[in-house]
Amino acid sequence: MSGEANLYHEGAARVVEWMMRDGRHVTRMREFGDEMCRRIAAAGIPLWRALCSVATLHPQIAATAYIWRRDEPGAKRMTATHAFERDPAFSTSPIAEVQRTGIAIRRKLCDPACPIDYPVLEEFRQQAGTDYVAMPMLCSSGDVNAITWLTDHPGGFTEAEMAGLANVANALAIIVELQATRRIARHLMDTYVGHRTGERVLRGAITRGSGDAIRAVIWFCDLRGFTTLADSMPRERLLALLNDYFETMVNVVTEEGGEALKFMGDAMLAIFELGATEDPADRCSAALRAAHSAAERIAKLNLERRAAGEAEIHYGLALHLGEVTYGNIGSRTRLDFTVIGPAVNHAARLEKLGYELGRAVVTSASFAACSPAEHLESLGLHNLRGVTEAQEVFAPTIDRARAFATLEK
Image (cartoon, rainbow, N blue to C red):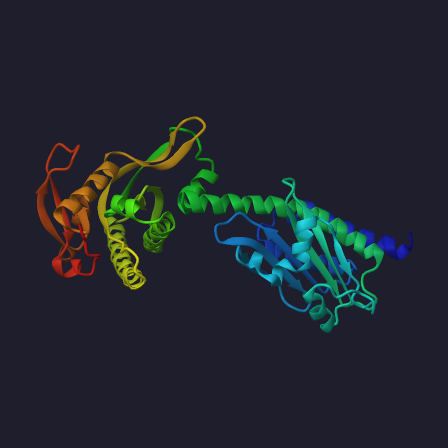
C-alpha cells in the first residue's frame, strides 16, 4: 500500500477514534455530524457533501436526515413523514435502495460512462460532483440506515479514501443506533404517557408502588352520546371523530402547561400540576383558558363536520383542585404511571353531574375558590356518588358559558 494510502487510512482512523471516545457523548446529532465531517475533511478526504438518513419510530415522522455541506456552517436537520416514504422522489433514490438491500451504491460521476440511473445523480453532476457513494449502516435489529458521501475533487474518491469512509460509516452505525434508541424511547414516552411523565420514567421512576403526593388541577372530559355514536357510525368515521376530539383536548391542555395522562374509552384524564410553592390560581386560570380554547376549536370542528354531513362532537368537562398520588401502579410486568386518589374520582363524578345539570363545564368548590369570582357561578349543593357530604358545584357564568360548547342530551 502506498504512503498516501496509509496517510488517509490513518486520518480516517483518527476520526473513528474521536467518534468512539469523545464524539459519542455529543447528543445533538447536528453538532456531532458537523464535527465528524469537518474532521474527515481535515484528515485529507475531500468531502463536499454528506447526508445521514436514520429511521425512527414516531407517529408522524418516518425518518430524520442530517445534511452537511463543506461551504455551509453546521449541519441541517430534516424530517420525512410516512407519506414521503411512498413518494417517488424517495422511493427511487439511492438511499431507499440501500435501505432495502443493505448494499452500497457508488457512482463515479466524473466518468463519462457512469450510469445516471437515479434522478438525484444528474443534479449532483450539474453541481460539479465527481463521485457519489451511498453506504449502509446496519443496526443490531437488522434495520438499515444509510449515509451518502459526495466529492467534487477531480477524479473522485481514491480507493483508500473509500476504505476510510467505510470505516467511518461502520462506527457511525453504532453511534446512530445508540442515539436513535434514546430518541425513540423519548418519543414513545411522550406519545404514550406524556412528556413530563415520560421524563420521570426515563429518570428511573419505574418501581411499582412508588409515587409522590402532589396538588393539581384535575381535568376530566368525556364525550356525550358516545354509545349511540358507536352503534350508528362506521368504525373509520368513529375513529376519525375520536381523533378530532382527543387531538383538540390534548392540544389545549399542553398549550397551557398541563399534561394529558390517559384516554379511557371516550374520556380523557389530564392534570395541571402545581409546584410546591405555586399559587393554585395560576393553574386554575390555565385550565379555564384551556377549556375556553377547547370550546372554540370544537365549535369550529363542528361547523366543518356539519357541512360534511358528519356527526358533531359534544362533550362534558369537570375541573377539580385537589391532592393526588402520582406514580406507578399495576402488576409486576405491566405498570401504569398515572394519578390516583379520591380527587380523581371526585372529578369523574362531577363530570357526570354536569350532564344531569345541563352544563358542559362544571367545577368543584376548591377549584372555584382559586378562580376569579366573576368567571364562575354556584349551581348549589349536589350529591356526588361515593361522596358522603353534598358538594357545592360551580360552572362558568351564563355570559361565559355561551362561549363553551353547547351540551346536547
